[in-house]
Amino acid sequence: MISTKGRYALRVMLDLAEHAANGFVPLKDIAERQEISKKYLEIIVKDLVGAGLIKGSSGKGGGYTLCRKAAEYSVGEIIEKTEGTLAAVACLSANAEKCPRAGQCKTLPLWREYDEMVHNFFYSKKLTDLLPSRK
Amino acid sequence: MISTKGRYALRVMLDLAEHAANGFVPLKDIAERQEISKKYLEIIVKDLVGAGLIKGSSGKGGGYTLCRKAAEYSVGEIIEKTEGTLAAVACLSANAEKCPRAGQCKTLPLWREYDEMVHNFFYSKKLTDLLPSRK
DNA sequence: TTATTTACCTATTGACATAGTAGGCAAATG
DNA sequence: CATTTGCCTACTATGTCAATAGGTAAATAA
Image (tube, rainbow over all chains, first blue to last red; front, side):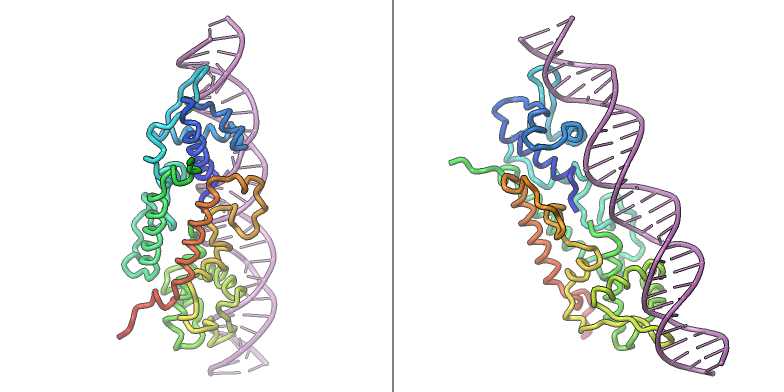
């Protein structure tokens, strides 16, 4: 299950994309618009900054802003960076130790297939796909 | 993420399907073949029995057996029954309280689409799809 | 009838993750 | 130099995960 961390991160990214014109967007504003505790968001944006997805600027007139254009972000990388992994089962997680039963495991191919499907789904979805199209 | 409970449940079901000819299969045998603690498996088969997927018989010559033919089980129902839900995000879980932001939530359609994809994937996969085809 | 084999039941545990909160320091601007 | 902002460490309550422990009940075979 995708936790609040990943889901909130996505909402923060969307909020930043929508207010990109304003330059740096203060976290306080995002917290109010998204109705999420600012304190909790601090943890999440820290991850996003650490992952190089957004950047922050201190002081008056500061806030956060995207590093790239909205269309260049996939939902997958946002979730993966904040959630830690996109893997659906522990055996397929990046830091998983090698399972001794892998060779004879009848379920492993299923998990692989699932994992690939999920990966494709989220990495083909761009941030702009979630934005309202302005005509 | 799909936990051990759902994954082990699937392996138990596959084991039962492979040894269906023998009638009731003792949990002890399954535990040994699958290299999973019998004690832990007890919890899992209890769920499976409760969900009406398998049935147990006490005493010598007893064990567990499938209620239907292997081809009539979808992987989805096995995981859903043992895992509690197949929902990828809390907002889409069956017992979720109505989110007041649902109307304006820009991410909800994404989760719905994802949820549908996952549901279709697992419900279209049958137990027999994971079994080696004997020629 | 009694020993054995099996399922089935309740309770408990340690480790870890989740979803935050609290209280500050550092930097930038007006 | 006061205010606004980001940034940092620490703490906590609650819950879930993955088991283990120690039984009772039922069915069968000797």
